[in-house]
Image (cartoon, rainbow, N blue to C red):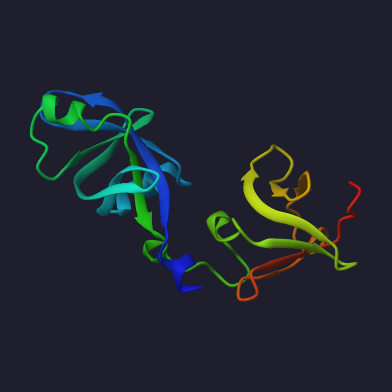
Length: 170
C-alpha cells in the first residue's frame, strides 16, 4: 500500500493568465474547488514529468481561482505554466472520516461480485446526477452504480478489492 499512498494525484490545472505580476488562473478538481488553495507544496507537469513548486498566494476571484507560484514574478514567466497539471502526493490529503473514501483510493482496486466473479479493475469514476458510477475494466467495461450497502457491499483497501452485489452479465 505504500506505493499507493506515495503516488501523485492531479488536483488541478493551470488554465490561463491573470494580470501582469505572475498570477495564473487555476482550474480545480477538488470539491469544494477552493480546497486546491490549501495545498502549498505541489508539483507541476504532466503524467510522469513533475517538478516541485510552491503556491505562495491564492484566492477565489469571481467564478475561478487564481494563484501565484514561487519564483514566478511576471506574465511571461507565468505563461510558461499554462496547461500544466498541479499534483500532490496522496499522503497530503486529509484523513477521511470513518466509512468515507477518496475516489483516488478506488482506482486500481479489483471488483468482485458476491459470486466471486472478477468484474475487472476500477479505471475511474463518473459523477452523475443520481449516483456516482464505478467504471470497471476487465474483459469488457462495466458501469457499476456506487451505492454503498446496496451495490457496493465492502471496500477493502488492504486487500485492494471492492465487493459488489452486481451480476457479471450486467
